[in-house]
Length: 375
Image 1 (cartoon, rainbow, N blue to C red):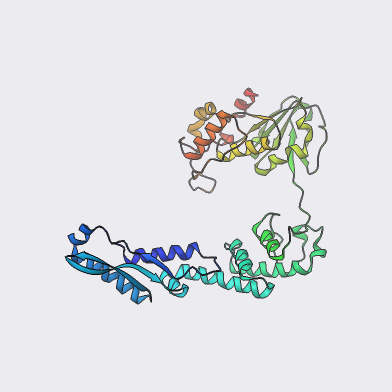
Image 2 (tube, rainbow, N blue to C red):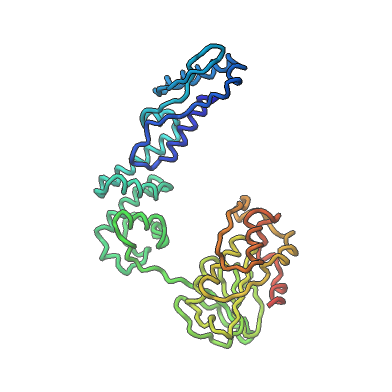
């Protein structure tokens, strides 16, 4: 039979599910599972004790009950459901932690309503977007939104770090699509903050022996042609591999960690020429294969090297189950429609789902000579 703890848990889950609702979701009836007839009659004492416990809990928390007649030797009325009449009752029953979260959400909603004159639905949508912010950062958000509302012309053309917001860290606004920026825009009805974004950059090295003394290049705007003839562009994921790449005739190495790969076509457009071969080499894990797919999705027709099942099997003993922070690498749902070959998709799925013993074989664990031999 359903216990008082079961009912309290169900109430807590409903409060959490509707934590950012404006319209009330109360009253609500929570059913009590009674069990089959023979179960009730097999243990009448236990049946009555459980029923009395639910009744006492409901009375203590200000809930009403609805009953149903069942036969336990003789016909008796047993609690069929517990009805929570309103939100205040639900919050008392749900416990201190979830009650505090709901009360905080409502308090923040009222703050946004009072300071910006928006309705409760819009205000609560903003509160939900910023649910992970501390009280200090939420107050900073309110001040920032008020300031931006009256200084739009002033900030046009500034970078986020140049915005003269008193008391704010230069990094508080973060990237252009950060939750804080999106929340400010949603509150003010703007499509975006009129800020000038820091240009994306791409780091690369010429590997030809003739360029040994050349410093690393940093592209922040399109480089229309290479400084020397290039036949091969090798994009690598990790910095150690990038810096350790040895001399190669008519070759260039790009540090393509993370989002940097998506800038290759824009910043080095000559890589798209038919005479240039682009090759990507990254970690053998879900992230590495997704980065490879992201590069191809920009229109760069690149091959991969040492990111196949044969290489995985050869170096799996050097793989890991732990992330950089020491926590286990979680399984994930494989993404669909990635720009990967059938063989790469099979490896990607196996790495995502835990079908292979180690979900990551880092690029640095594979000798550079092994990769170069396959180019």
